[in-house]
Length: 499
Image 1 (cartoon, rainbow, N blue to C red):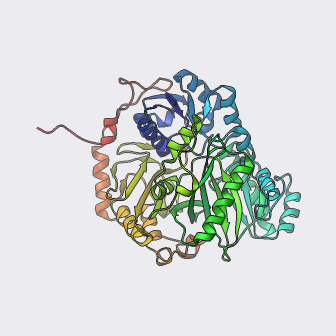
Image 2: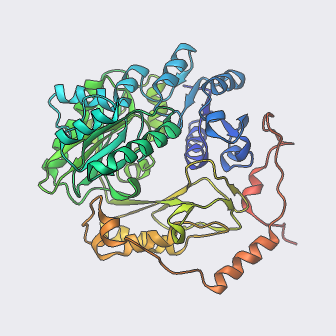
């Protein structure tokens, strides 16, 4: 087993991996940009290293600096989390060349599934149903116009090198194609360092259903059932749950076995997610493989009892899976809400600033994966996800009620968040009825305004700001240490010893 793992990420996913390392008796080394010097993942790790300025391209996407830091720290392995370099085949290959274990799939498999065009071609040859689309990436506007006409509008523009909704645009007619391609390419370049995009047929109002898969290095593959991720805004998942109301046992088994086939055809190892679109006739289409840990992995952990980060680490260390398909089952129902630093009253634009007051939801069946604390700064440079609130209960109705109570108990002041918006999603009659498609937000909450903050709430925020004190930070380019870094006590907010 590894002695030390370098976590090449930030925020809540870095904190999640640090906790797994601690449980497994492995030292965790964090990296941070100058904007994240007092981040919770920096405070939580055994040691931390500055890897560059705030822009991701100069820090979290700097392959040379991360490899250099892994060497400097003495790490045996690198865990990429999700986003940034997590699905970068060149980075995985570089780790292999440097004899540093990459905690994820091998570079060859990642190269295949990460290239959405090649992946589609491979699945098509294997007899796996795919969505009609281009057989190559965008080369010219004229080529795309011809392909869009062949496929038939509406079409979806998608980034070839990544996921997470980045680079995606829907075009309903030819007049929108050029601007959509240009915008999608810019966003893909910024998010993944690769501007390649392609077109596929846009399926109206499907469900987005994905299967979690684990594959070790000894030929063993299992699926850990499905997550429904249909509640999306701007093609970004915001609520996920397991199991899906749309699947019966027969369809679940069929999709699960198809997901395993996708993984085996790809020569894939470690944790991955096979994504499908499910139409109103219960016909499913392969969408893509996410070659990493998913943001929504906790819902699978809660219904199966399997810790996916532990499994990632064990598989990367060469261990066999300790369970078979027949021993796995879903128990109860889990729902996850992503908490974003976004302003619902200003078109959901990112909201940066200082967290002036922070109250976590707690209680039976409530899990909170978080990357902030009271007094921490939320920078403008990265994905605005702050935390994930996950609940488990015996059935879906109870899970919805538990999530509503947990959101009611959740308070973040100083920045705008999506908490109130999520309350209305979970409380909506159509959500409670399980009528969830990718058009749920547009059909039911388009133009959502919610309720403005009350004078009392604004007063609390003002008081929190008045009492917010200075926090210690350490200089760029230095290693975190007892005398330099913010300590875990920093995350507690204002406190004093009793008399």
